[in-house]
Figure 1 (cartoon, helix red, strand yellow):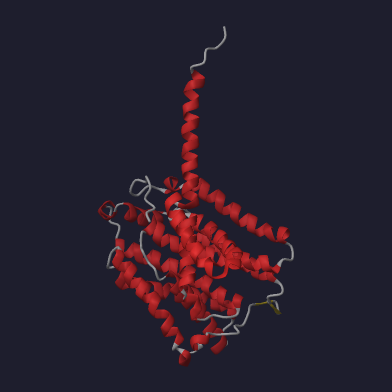
Figure 2: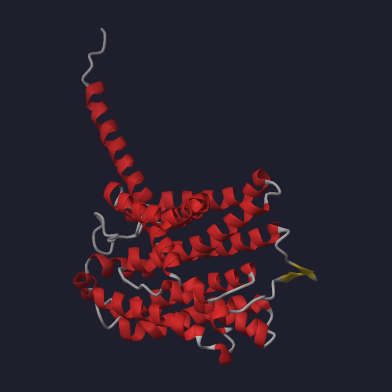
Length: 348
């Protein structure tokens, strides 16, 4: 999984496709903002869109690590779960306003990510992956036996207080308010990730990914930059986890299941690793595809496994990578036509 492509170390945003990133991001938000007009009163479709935006934000945050910073952190779902639990526990056990739970969830995800990054980022490659995977694996048993501190044990926490706007409590019967809150958070993830990638800070971690020795010769510290991007990614993920808890009204160790992890991996792979905003688009496709595949029951995960194999073989750089290839091919064909047209004789 490399986002290096043909970039030179330390290349500025133009090499990342700044114009296309901007257009696709704005277009995606505008389409989502207008989509309820087309969907109408279909609460079921709206729920799928809300869930897609939640996991789209998580996929974008994870891609900052995998695709751009080259940090193989496999504990991303853990940050999501901790953000959800932190908001739910304080809301139900301490009476915290659910809206403040968003901030608490974001802070929890960011702080835990940094604490995990302090030891893991001193390692390299597969060792980072193994340590963060161990964190992910041990988190579910810890939450399952943490009933004494308010985790709800294996049953989790339910019901969780929903949001209230102007005295009106949001319910599942009206998805519109939930939808636009999710859209706001999703747009925030898009904006933060966009500016993180296309800033001097972004150039630093992209340069470290492409050529660590070159970046360090410029005075860029791999450890400090990686720690910052891990914290940012964890913060966005914890934020989406907090919203998820109050939206669904329940959070349990099941959110740390292997199936959830696999879905997130496929979202990033399908959209394109290091191809902003591809992972977000991949999230929408996977959520709707997963819903359609429910009719196949136990065969669903087998189909998803086959999908991963197909993606890796046919489009290893995902949908955005395939779009890059199509654009390159089009430019080459266009360039070939120009000399031929220039060679034509002009009638006297």
